[in-house]
Amino acid sequence: VAPNALLGELTFEAREALGLHAAPASVGVAAGSGDNMMSALGAGAAAPGKFVMSLGTSGTLFGASDTAVEDPSGTVAPFRDATGRYLPLLCLQNCTNVLQEVSTSYSM
Image (cartoon, rainbow, N blue to C red; front, side):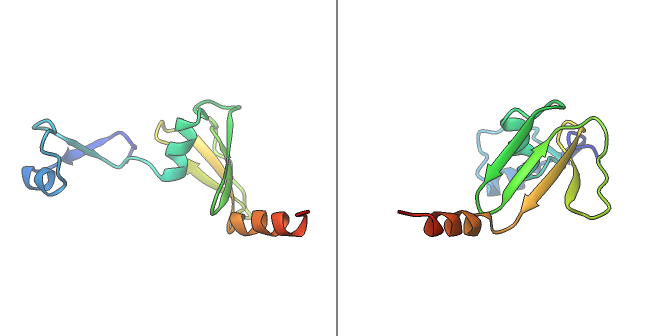
C-alpha cells in the first residue's frame, strides 16, 4: 500500500482509548512510514542528492533517490520513503560503541 493511501477511519472507541478527544469526527488511518524514512524527510533529504547521517545507537546514512538502489550484498537497504521515492540506507549497528571506543582510546 502507498504510505498515504487511506485504509480506513479510526473508530470512536479507538479515538477515546488513545485520548484523541479533540480529534475530528473522521480520523484517517494510513500505512505511514518508518522512523528512518521520516527522519530523512524531516532533515531535508526529500530530493535526490540530499543525504542525512544520523549517529546514535546505530549510525545511518541515507538519501532520496528516484530509482531503486539494489545491493546484492545487503549492505544498503532498499527502503522507500513516505513520498514514494526510494531511500537507500546504510546502517552500522552499535554506533555508540564505536564512538565510545574512539573517545576512550584517544582521550588526553
